[in-house]
Image (cartoon, rainbow, N blue to C red):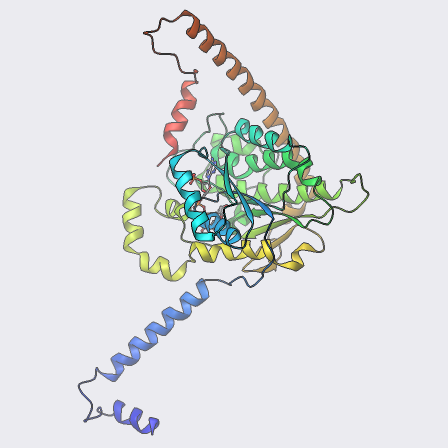
Length: 409
Ligand SMILES: NC(=O)c1ccc[n+]([C@@H]2O[C@H](COP(=O)([O-])OP(=O)(O)OC[C@H]3O[C@@H](n4cnc5c(N)ncnc54)[C@H](OP(=O)(O)O)[C@@H]3O)[C@@H](O)[C@H]2O)c1
């Protein structure tokens, strides 16, 4: 019977049915819709199926207010984890207050907090991390998810942080190096039976990065391009992450038990997030208009932020990742191999580690002197000024002020 109807339909229609569209048109529409559905299904990526008891676990996350990081933070909060968001803004900032209230409402979890850490500042990173490790006994910490990142859209000028560092290098790599370096005692102090995970979010573009060397190239304007700056920072993050795993493994615990902290790298895949939108639109209004015009295509070929978060959730909850050696690379909820040998090269890591330490020491020293001078100036102005005078702001070098203005596009 169905074969008879199909045959009738293709050879002139079925007379007793109301006007049907041309069967070829119907077929074309069906084929087109099926193709779109298959493409969408493929580009949505693999869904995480791992689950783990998250109640009582303390998860620290950077970049938890946008895109992939925001989805990850919310999903872990829904599962009962205590979330510590490291945010640009202060916890009292109206955006953060509202954001946390919203997260609490959606997750039914009150244990969501924010701590202000501007990852563009070595000083702010140190201020937060030293405060964290000052706790005695050490605070519980089950997971650190490093999701924050920045990028300079192609065609935009190189951006320096107020401390004079190239922004991609600072936010995507050096801030994480500094943060984990200071938090290291707090991580190593976790009980041996606690499954601690440090999740680094990288990008597949790391494989096209120029060599990291000791990090000095990242600071040189003549070698800078927007894509080099981003890819190099991600490669450096991965090289450092491998070295950090070795640093943790080498630690001899006072109780003689083995350590239980694992570094895991994630490539979330290209996803429709504010960060991606900024990159693809070149940070321009025209770019944004074009992006909106081709949004359907972007929707078909790219994951949502939810899709991008799947591999991170897998790394956070898959039981088998809490066993065996650390340093695994996950993409599409599967373990992958590294595309570059320098990621696991100890000599490369040593050079980068030493170069980064030197750079941080120099900048921290220079900034301490600058802050002390600014404080003195402020005190002088306070003493000498009359009550009608506007109090002087702490001085800031002109070039650094300029770089701040350049930042937002
Ligand atoms: N989206 C993709 O297609 C894609 C592809 C591969 C890899 N990734 C990686 O996946 C991660 C998440 O990407 P995404 O696209 O979801 O990111 P996103 O939407 O651009 O969000 C970036 C996050 O980082 C935070 N951040 C940036 N600069 C900061 C600073 N100086 N201090 C503190 N926080 C700062 C932002 O906070 P504010 O909003 O307050 O600035 C925001 O929460 C990144 O590591 C990215 O490199 C993404």
